[in-house]
Image (cartoon, helix red, strand yellow):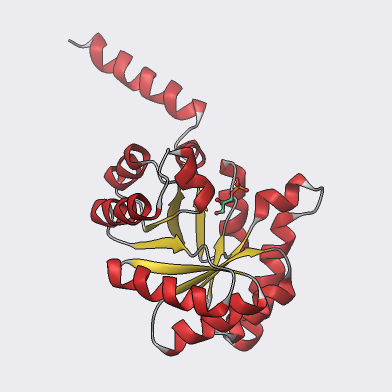
Amino acid sequence: MKFFIDTANLAQIKEAQDLGILDGVTTNPSLMAKEGITGHDNILKHYIKICNLVDGDVSAEVISTDFEGMVREGDALAELHDQIVIKLPMTKDGIKACKYFSDRDIKTNVTLVFSAGQALLAAKAGATYVSPFIGRLDDISTDGMHLIAEIRHIYDNYNFETEILAASVRHTMHIIDCAKIGADVMTGPLSAIEGLLKHPLTDIGLAKFLADYNKGN
Ligand code: G3P
């Protein structure tokens, strides 16, 4: 399972990278704004900084909503750095743009996916990644994890190569449940990733080992 971090915060990206378990980064316009990164040029510069911090794929989202605009923007983003993955919204034009980029071997991430049918279309268009939003489905009393299972089932039926990138991961149990179902990738906050480290018996056991060691010294 690949681990992506879902943030534009450079300090958090570096912390995850230094842990040695990071496979990539996802961003979106809201995450950029949260870090105070605004304006076209600043956003592009920030993508380059992120790419230089990590080894893996970095999703950069287009702002255009029409096919021609998405293609123009995506082509420019792809030129920025070879780690950039073009993030496209799950719309009619987004699917057309996804096919355009996949035909040219440019990686894509189809985002804002909330149904199995949308995920099927993204795979048909050759998406590298499909991003079903677990947390936002949970927010409206719909089981986000069920969607991951449905997509896994459909993709396995036809050996689609599109990777299921579980997004809108909010906490540690989301990661574990995604791993049980077989999501290829998860993207979440640093707090959810670090939650995997924790167990009180580990802390108690370590304290006891150290105390016993110190008895003899
Ligand atoms: O990866 C998508 C993500 O950024 C959305 O997360 O928490 O805003 O639903 P959230």
